[in-house]
Amino acid sequence: MTQNTEISGSSRLGPLVDLDVVEATLRAALDAGGEWAEFFAEDRESAGAVFDEGRVEEMNSGRDRGVGIRVTAGDVTGYAHTADLSAQGLTDAARTAAAVAAGHGGTVEMTPFWGSGTAAARVAVLPASIGTERKVALLRMADDAARSVDSAITQVTARYAEGRRRILVANTNGLCAADDQVRTLFSVGCVASGDGGLQTGRETVGYTVGWELFDTHDPAELARRAASRAVTKLAARPAPSGEVPVVIARGGGGVLFHEACGHGLEADLVRKGASVFAGRVGEQVAAPGVTLVDDGTMGPEWGTLAIDDEGHPTQRNVLISDGVLTDYMWDWLRSRDVGRAPSGNGRRQSYTHLPMVRMTNTFVTNGEIDPDDIIADTPWGVYVAQLGGGQVNTATGDFVFGMTEAYLISDGVITEPLREGNLIGNGPAVLAEIDAIGNDFAMGSPGTCGKDGQGVPVGDGQPTLRVRALTVGGTAA
Image 1 (cartoon, rainbow, N blue to C red):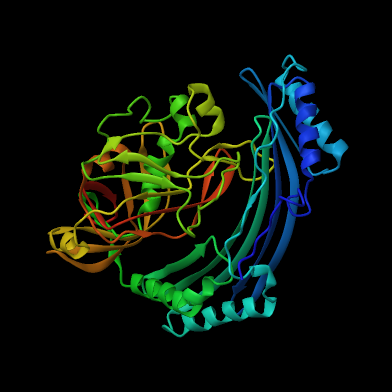
Image 2 (image 1 turned 180 degrees about the horizontal axis):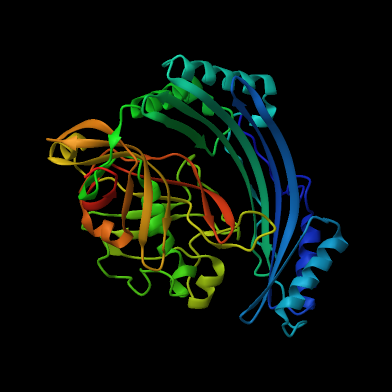
C-alpha cells in the first residue's frame, strides 16, 4: 500500500515540530532583526549493508533530526542550525541567525501560513519494514551470480542502501510545505583478474521508490552484467589518442552534460561570473536539435522531489531548446534579486547547510535517429558505453572524464574494448559538435552531485548521440 504522512490535522512533521512552534520561531527571528526568515526541519533515516569477500562486511543505520534557521536583512544572510528541538532551543537559533543578519528588527509583519500538506512518499513498501535477513539474502544472491559468470572474477562487492527523508519548510512569506522522500539503491562492483592485470565492472540501480525496486530489478542480473563488464575489459586494448568522433551510449554519458554544462547553468555561478554561459540567454549555444532539461518531477528518478529544500514545487525547466539557451536554474535568493520566480532548484545536503542552486534530473532529450544508424554512419571512432568521474572548470567549461567502458568503432561496427582512456574537451564545444541524436533516451545510474562541500542525489541521462570531434586521451597512437 502507498505510505502517506500528513502534517495537516496533526500539524506536525511526523514526530518532529509543531506548527505553532514553527510560527513562534519565525516571529522570534523577525523580532530579533530579520526582514525575512525561513524554518527548515529535517528528519532523516538511513540504513545499508555491504557484502564483500563472501560475507557481510558492514551494516549501518542512523537517524538525524534538526532544524536550520535562515534570516535575511537586506543583502546579508544569517544561518544557524540546531538539534535541540525544544521551543527555547529553536528560539535561540532564530535569534542567533538574526543577529548575524543584523537588520533593523521589530517592524516586519509575518504572513500567515497558507499551506501545510505533506507530499506523500509514493512507495508501495517502505524499505524499513523489510527484515535484515531479506536484504542480506539479496546481497548474497548478487555475490553468487557474479562469481558464476567466469572464474576470472576474483572480487565482488555488493551494496544495499535505503533512506527516508522528511522535511518541513516554512517562511515568513506564509509558505509552509513538506515532503516525504524515500530512496532505495543496490549496486554491484566486480574485479576480474587476467594476464593484462585487473579490470572492474559496476552496475547500480536506484530510484525514489521503496522495496518494490526489486519487483522490476533483479540483483542477480545486475551482478551478472557487472561481472561480464569486468571480464570483457580483460581483453581491452589501449585507447587511441587524439581527436576522434565519439558516440556516447544512451544513459552512459549523462554525467558529462551534468558536469560540463549543467553546473554552468546554475544561477549562483552565473551571477558570480563563474559560468561560461553567463549573459548568453537567447544565444545559440548548442547544435540545432539539442535540448537540455532539468526536471525534478521526473517519475521515480533519483533526483525527483515534490518540493525543493526551500519549499517550492519542483518543475520541468528547459535550459537549452533546439540549441538556444533559454534559462538558468534558480533558487529563491537569486530569483528574488532579479524579480522572478524560483525554478525549484534550491537544495541542501541537510539542515546544517544553507541551500544553493542545484540540479535534480538533468538530461538531453530524444532525437529522431535510430542508434544503430549512428554507429553505422561512423567509419571510425570511439563508442563510450559508460563514463566515470571527472573534473570540470565551470568558468571555462573545460573537462576531463574517465571512460569506464569504451569500444573501438571500425567501419561502422563496434569492435574491440578499450582501456586507459579519458575524454578531454569543453562543454559548450561538445554541445556545438553534436551531429547525431538517437531516439533511444535513457537515464543513467543514480548519482550524488558535489558542490561547495555539499552532496545531493541527482539523475542524468541522454539518448545515444555522436560528437563530431572530441579528444580522447589514450595510450595508443
